[in-house]
Amino acid sequence: MDNDSLDSRRYIHFLRHTVLYALQTKDLVSNGDFGHDDTLFGLIADDIYQQGYSIRHNALPDSLVQALTIQQQAIPSIKFKEAGIGRDNLYAKNEFVRTDEICWITGETEAGRSWLSWSAALQVFLNRRLFLGLFSFESHFAHYGPGNYYKRHVDAFKGEANRVLSIVVYLNSGWALHDGGELVLYKSDTDKEGVKVTPLQGTIVAFLSEEFPHEVLPAKRDRYSIAGWFRVNTSNKDKVDPPV
Image (cartoon, rainbow, N blue to C red; front, side, top):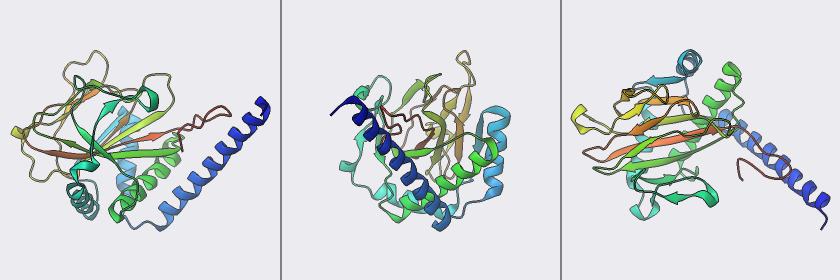
């Protein structure tokens, strides 16, 4: 097969992937029963526009919080894997950096589909309001056992146009200050104090992936959350990114 034929096949694959994702997103937004709230989405958009991040307490719809909490705690431990850093061939476990475990959300359950529907509605709203060009979304459940952590890091390096917006939601009822496990969001590379977020149930945190270093402090009890990333489409005839 000559190079021109190979390039053409790759480009056709990219176009099919683009159309398929657009149709799936449209169906999620049109058919999902997830109680999304344009008022809440507007507050998140305004926060991101004004300061690059948003922290909204008790904001995720309670029915969705309960469904996701039940699902995460019902997932067999064998389904979780030790989290690592990097993607694809660059993926590696690194306990110096992080010690949590994760399970990707695929939409195979009603709770997972409802979460992806809510996220798709947020994506559409933010694209309309802020023109972010968000193209795809990926997310996973995260479990931090007592003493687990994720050291200071960024979700996307400057100039690498992939992850644009990060989102975290918390699924922990009755969380007290002495339980620890805060997310610390730093406003710059030189910021040493940061903004601490207690992982209370229903809290939503969203921030520009390139702009805000952050870390998860060790907790004294099991800590449950979802972490997700909205990405832009950087596909070309040589690669499909985001991957299918």
